[in-house]
Image (cartoon, rainbow, N blue to C red; front, side):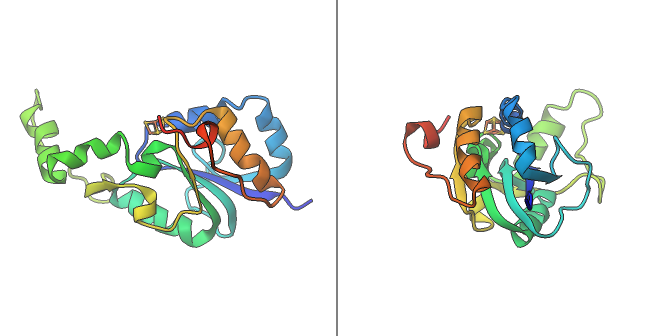
Length: 182
Ligand code: SF4
C-alpha cells in the first residue's frame, strides 16, 4: 500500500491545535499505518517543506514574512490543504492585534512603551521575521480545500476529518460536531 504523504504546519498559533492532534493518542498508531509524516513540528526534523505532499493541516494565522513564504510553498506542494483550527480559519487570537492599526503600533507598545529594561525594537534580519501589518486567515493568502474550525478542534473532530482522506474520500464538514467554532 502506498502511504499518504502527510504534513502539519505551525504558523501563528499557540500549538494548541497540534496538542489536540496528539490527543488522538492510540489512534496515532493506527494513522501511522496509512501515512508517512513528511513534515511536522511534532513528527519530523525536516527544515524544508517537501514536494508532493498529499494532505497538510495548517495551524495558525499568517502573521509574518516567514509564515507568508511558508504558506505559499505549502500550497504549491500540497494536494489537500486543511485550514486547521480557528486561528487558521479566521485569524482568531493572533488576529486580535489587527484592531491596533498595523504592526508598528503593536511593536512600539510591546517593546518600547512596555519595555522595562533597555526598550528596543527587535531587529535581526534573517532571524527575526518582519511582522505583516495584519494577521490573515490562511484562505485570504492561498486557496484552502477543507476548513476545520475549533479552538482547538477536538481530537474526535480531527480524527473524523482525517479518516475519509485515508480512503481517498473527502470528509463532510457539517453540523455542530464538525464545524462549531471555539
Ligand atoms: S485555534 Fe486555538 S488552540 Fe489552535 S492555535 Fe489558535 S488559539 Fe491555539
